[in-house]
Length: 365
Ligand code: ADP
Ligand code: MG
Image 1 (cartoon, rainbow, N blue to C red):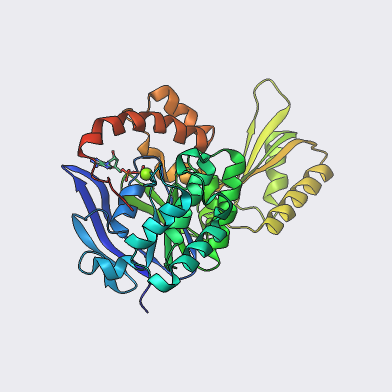
Image 2 (tube, rainbow, N blue to C red):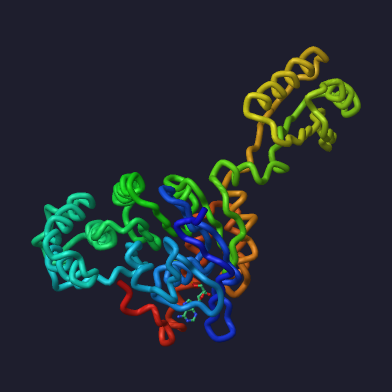
């Protein structure tokens, strides 16, 4: 069966620099897809190619069976796009702007005003329809961007970093709007922030240095680092005694006991594989009772679950090279993904200034 979007071996070079390398993926109807990756990973480039605003160096993209390079008009009919920098005309009112977009999209004249009203209702900008765009808050401007994207009922909505620059309240509102749009549309959104993508997406595509490094559900991605799941304990007892007790537990295969210097406590680490949460709880209890029966009190027990954040950091860690962020800042990435993203963002801003001259994204709509 044909997928709604089929991307095959897509490569985009800017001079010698490969911004996107041999990218292949499919998008099925009705799902919300998230492109996740640090700044500079190639998300915007990919979106600009899929939406027909940038040509590819190699590869093919078909939208609903139409080749975006050979039949751009037909392919684009299926897509509503909100680029990273929405092309809003500041001196138009919201309604004037929507009429202008309807003209560009060549919407049927008879149903034009109904379609405009519907798009404005859906995105919550109807009440500001007579306001000048330049006088709107950033959150409302972003909603107007959404309104122009969904005008004309495109099947696919593509949103490039739709929550960047918004405050937390606006982010939640936009997230809700994305979920609402997801009921009737297929959505692809990009973000460099993991929590953003995992909050709304059914499928996550992680990009790093122009390549796809993962394409899976949030749940499966979280399972990927299964080797990193473990139970760690501090136990009051002798090394060999603890070893003998744990060896008798059949739920445990792989564990390690090491005495702590200058202390009666031993550090124990039990590796987990693909156990469910229930099974893990069962192991924790078995360990508790076995050590208690042997009079070896547990002083501390904690289970570390590999999180999506770990997966993201592991898969994209090579992005953080000394050119993108200084080494000290790069060390901080272990703290949180958001912190890392912001660090690189600063470096990216500098880079953007540098590459602005040959930037050919201008005039997107
Ligand atoms: P993302 O959206 O994931 O932050 P981009 O697709 O914007 O990434 O950029 C991918 C890479 O391509 C980056 O290294 C960026 O500097 C480079 N790049 C993007 N646009 C241009 C351009 N017009 N000219 C030269 N290099 C570019
Ligand atoms: Mg981008």
